[in-house]
Length: 115
Length: 113
Image 1 (cartoon, chains in turn cyan, green):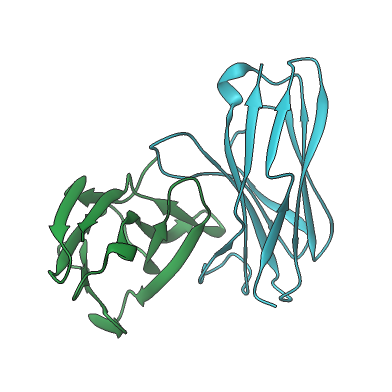
Image 2 (image 1 turned 180 degrees about the horizontal axis):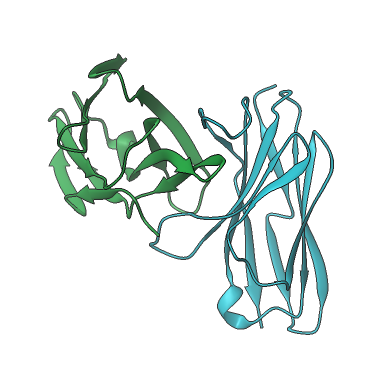
């Protein structure tokens, strides 16, 4: 199984809602990532977990809260988002930890629209 | 902040032609990777070249790395309509105690049938 699965594929939420994005991989990878991608822009790194510990937080606003319950799962909890947070949120995993990033395996993304 | 900068930003070629895309970066790297993204989809890893390597091949792909010029190129030979996509170079570089992968702005490749 070489897949990274993200749910939901599409999410529409109001600015007062609380929702979560979920990501799962069963490749035994030790690092998992959240990237944010706006239209016609490159993916921007948000968070990195290595061995289930948060290793990188790219100064992301606290309305985004990551969680790594175990080595296969990665969540992104969303609360009080702004319309400008609308984007494609991509989850990825890599076999190694984060001292030397190897190939990333990406999910198909969760398309988030904040009204 | 972006590390890699691709050139050109958009490329349109005829099926069967070769496509060459360039990437320049600013700091020392552990490795450089190329990814493809079809519209609205996730990214797919194409090839990784380490900082001590100069050239690598994978099927119709050839990537070169010149660390003295801080640049890389991706060549896709005998292009197909299915190669139409956005292509990103990504550099893995040290960031404090960690390393992180940073993507360039991307190149939009259109292959005309």
